[in-house]
Image (cartoon, rainbow, N blue to C red; front, side):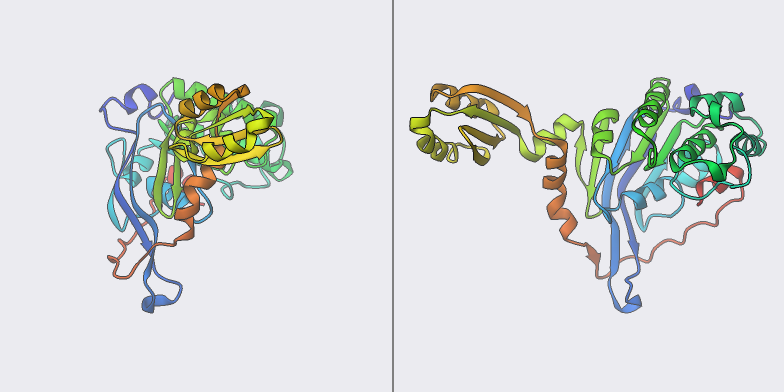
Length: 346
């Protein structure tokens, strides 16, 4: 039995998450004499039910603060945030949202099964304990004391706890931290199965390969703003186009390299032995030129996600945005004492 069936969660047609001109400022460390710091600086974002969305960004980018707003843990300074058409805190209290965070929320002296059963008892209705333990891969660990579980095993336990109310939206902060490669892949297989059934998954991660492999969509945040939003292929193309390489005729290598640098859309040209390696927005034009010039062993590949990440976030992350005259931050509402919210607030 579940508190909020996935099929009804999105029946209103509202997006799972909608942020409009979201701004969150904090007082300067220098107190009232300094300008307020804009942790989030005008984010617009819409996430539809069933999407698996990765939040990527360097430290201090504003992604965690944004997720805190979605969870109702803090209120915007300005702008709006809605979850399934409701205020975030209301959505949390209604059981529409669960979170898997990195620390806290576990009693070390209980066993894994005792922990799940204890939290399940706080809900009027919940997904069966055995079912959530199986989905989180906790069967072999049922009798183990929490204090004896590894960091990755504790993350799987937090995942099981988050599944108890069968929430239509899961918000995950570094969800696979401490997991080995196999456990990480099993975790994301379960997440994609849930997304296929209608659950929305939003996660922050520092694993670029994890976002590349498991997210349907990547939201890249830097300097409190969204600097890119799309599939990994779209982000790669936006950041640095494609990489075209070919072996050049030795008698004309110098001449051809010089000419390549003059082609429109060429961002960089490198000489690697007998090969020219060109990063360009118009890969077709570069490829045609190389073939016409007698190049051989032509290759065209998308730029790596890491390269795109560095290109798109470098400028934004270097400038810390501050507001000289910022609006007074809205006081965050008093946290309710529901079991769901206790699990979220760590």
